[in-house]
Length: 312
Ligand SMILES: Nc1ncnc2c1ncn2[C@@H]1O[C@H](COP(=O)(O)OP(=O)(O)OP(=O)(O)O)[C@@H](O)[C@H]1O
Ligand SMILES: [Mg+2]
View: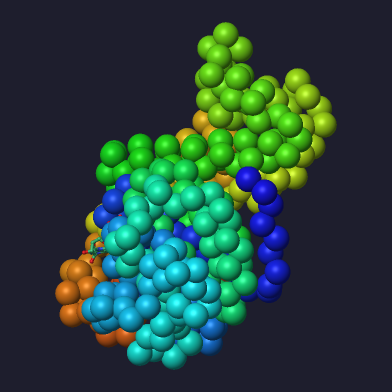
């Protein structure tokens, strides 16, 4: 894919993770609300085309504008920003019925990314849909901060692993495409058994060892490939400790550094706020969850991690 140039100062965060129903939209809305409360000018972008519901988390039942106008009428993204009832935070709704997310064309995608990068906000937060479609991965990859939301369940861990693995593989291919190496990477990966390669980390190590100048390029590009992990719906200490094992597994098999940025308890107040169509951080400030969202955001911004007992 051609390079998209970043032309503004604000940060783009993307919230994904593979599995459906893990709390991506809840985290997007709450993180955005907290940043806005701290005085940041925030725009949320709902990229869950076909399953968009970010607007409902702000009590908007039928958004007046949505990405439909971008895809069908060529409207500019900045004209599709809708105010919420909260100060400093607006959103772009992904409530699109005329096009499926996997039918978005390459040029529409590039145009969308260029316009997301130009949005006038200190924080743009993108809510991704479930799954690992390449359009979802590409959107994840434009972010300055890539956030994955995980719940402590085996299927969710598997889905997240595939999501991160596929994002990394796409990043490697995209990086090397510009140097004429994309086909070689795919060729080696397709025959990985005969090369003695077991996982993406070993593929990257092989590429670095075999083509030294590629090593320099990959080192440079992948230095920014850091993932912020959020464990959502935790119910006990074992769930919280899971973050530590995820970190080591991801490093071992993918070579990807994971920042364990936060965890959020399971709390009935969350689905109640969704049912009441009220932004969670507005009405439930006294809950443990709200405090955990604040810690999560502060950790992401300051590059800090969850401190676990026993020196994990
Ligand atoms: N910490 C939590 N405690 C209790 N319920 C939660 C918590 N986080 C999310 N939920 C509930 O789980 C449901 C799914 O949350 P949400 O819609 O944010 O998930 P999602 O990952 O965006 O789903 P999708 O993949 O369909 O977009 C919602 O009903 C929400 O209220
Ligand atoms: Mg969602």
